[in-house]
Length: 250
Image (cartoon, rainbow, N blue to C red; front, side, top):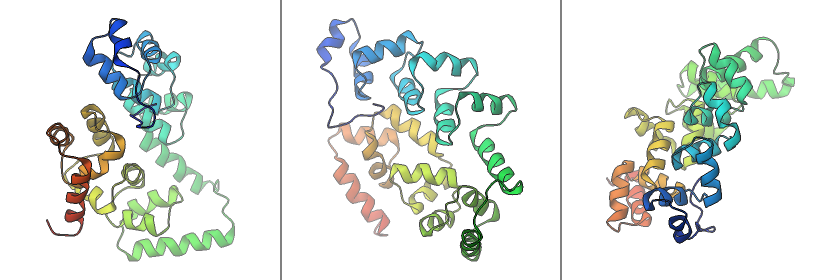
C-alpha cells in the first residue's frame, strides 16, 4: 500500500515500539500502511523515510531494485513520473543519459512515431481525430498543448475541457487522478504549483489521498489543511467550502 486505506487499518503501534522504533517514525510508516516487515525491508534497502518508500512503491519499484535506480541517478519522485509514462528502468536510464526527463522522452517518442508512420491509425479513425483536433483549435487551444493531447490519443470532450485551461496532457492526467476540476488545476498552475510538487507536499503533510482534492479545491495549502484537520475541521467542511468556491459564491 502506498497510502492510507480505511478498509485496511495499519498494524498496532505497540508492535513497532516493541521492535525499537521511535513513535514518530513508526507513525509515518503506518500512515502509508506499510507493515513492520515491509518497513524493515525498505530500510535495509537504504530507504530511510516512509514517504520515499511510498514513492518508490508507487513507481512499481521493489526494495531490492531501488539500488539500480539510485545508481542511475534517478530519484523516487522521478521514478514515479517515468512509471506514469510506461518506462522501465533500462529505458529511463537511456533517456536520462541523453539529458531527457520523462516528459521530454515521452514527447520525443510520440512525435517521432507520428512522423515515422508508427501510429498506423485506420483511415476513419484518423479522420475523426482530425475533426477533434479542429475542435481543439477552434476553442483557442495553443498548438503545443494540442500536440500533447494528440500524442496521448486523448481528444474527447473531457480532454478538451482540460486543454482549454492551457494544461498540458501529462499534468491534466495527474490533476484529474487527484480529483480536481480543470478550473481548479488552472488556478494552481497560475500559482506555479506543479502536480508533482503538490503530490509531494500533500504526502509529506500526511493528508489521505482521497481528501486532497477537497482541501485543494477549498483553496488551502497542504500545511494549512493539516492545521485545519488538527483543529477538528473535517473534509466534509472543506468539500462544502470547495463547492461554494466552484459556484462563485466566494
